[in-house]
Image 1 (cartoon, rainbow, N blue to C red):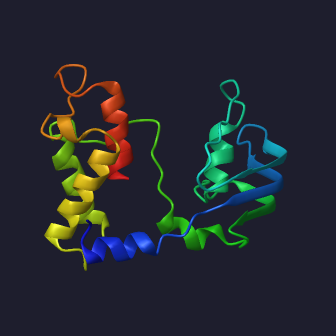
Image 2: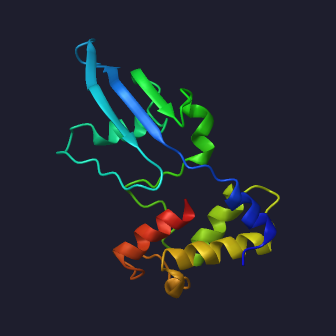
Amino acid sequence: ALSSAVARRRDRRVPLNFAFRDLRVTTLDRETGHDKVLLDGVVGDFRAGKVTAIMGPSGSGKTVLFDTVIGRAPSEFVVSGDLKANGSGDIRMLRSSIGFVPQDDILFKELTVLENAECMSALRLPPDFTTDDRRELIASVLGALKIDHVQHVKIGDDEQRGVSGGQRKRTNIAVE
C-alpha cells in the first residue's frame, strides 16, 4: 500500500487526451527568408491509455508533430490549426502534467538506477513529499518498470559497463 501522500497524488491524476485538426507548423528559413512549412493539414489524436505510433522516414516531421502537440515546440515555430488537450486549447497550462522522455539519455552514467531516480525525485517532486514518500514512489515505479532488480547497478556508457539499453530507457522513463 502506498502512503497517503503518494496515494492522494495518484488519485488526482487526470488522463490527458490530445486532439489536433488541420495542424500547420511553419518556421522562417534563414537562408531564403521565406516561411518553411514543417507540417501542413495534420489530423489526429492521442488518447489516454492507448498506444499511438508515429511512423515515417527521417525528416518527415514526427518530432515536430509530437513536440507541437505536447506544447514543447520551439518559440520560432508558428503553429496554427485546432489543437486541444482534454477539450482545452491552452496546452501550456498542462506542461507540468506532461512527462517527456527524450530520445537521448538524460541520465548520470556514474550513478546507479536508484541514485538517478532519487536525484530527480528530490528535484522535481513537490516539497510536501517526505523522504519516505519519495522512496516509496521510487520503489513502486522501479517495480512497475521491472528495473528494481538492477537498482544498484550504475547506468554506465560505452566505456563503463552498466545496465542494458532497455534498462537504461526504462530508467529514463522512471526519472520522468
